[in-house]
Length: 205
Image 1: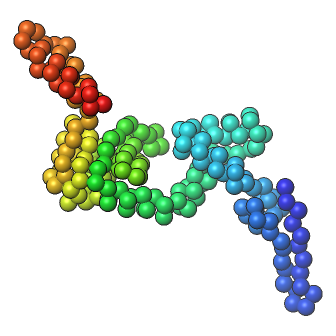
Image 2: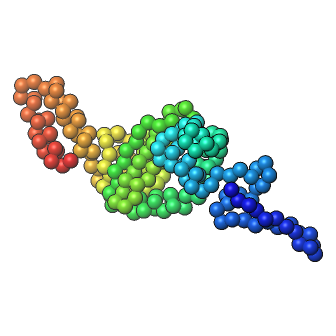
Image 3: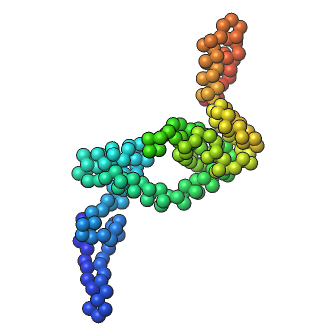
């Protein structure tokens, strides 16, 4: 709660009011209720970091703190945080472009209830996330370009083959999984090859 002093100039009549450093808005009256910076940070962490929907964030704030919040307010707070962090995100992408090694993966996601993909790219110093409607490597291509020539680690998804100048390293877990699948269906002398692959790659984990 902030007590704001308001006044006006006795000469020109210009109105003025004070502002505390922790205020997030100059609004007063019916619009004076504000979500402070710590609460806003918690909202962003709950939604983006912990994966709670905006509706669940609203319920957490109501049941735990007695703070009334709308789903729209939660969404707007996350959007404002994204705008403020855009410069930092671009710095991460720039560092990724200069990386000598990148591990790429993607997993299912939702955008407004529709299917999408969460891409993750891990470099030596930076980890970048990108949500896209497509699973393909188009998103990574836009970041590092097709002429990127480092070591690219990924699963067997063929979309990454477009990076022809890169050195491709298959994910060890995927190699082991395929070898174990081969071993499960192998008979007689056919068991030797998957066993040899497993023996070699289990020490690379």
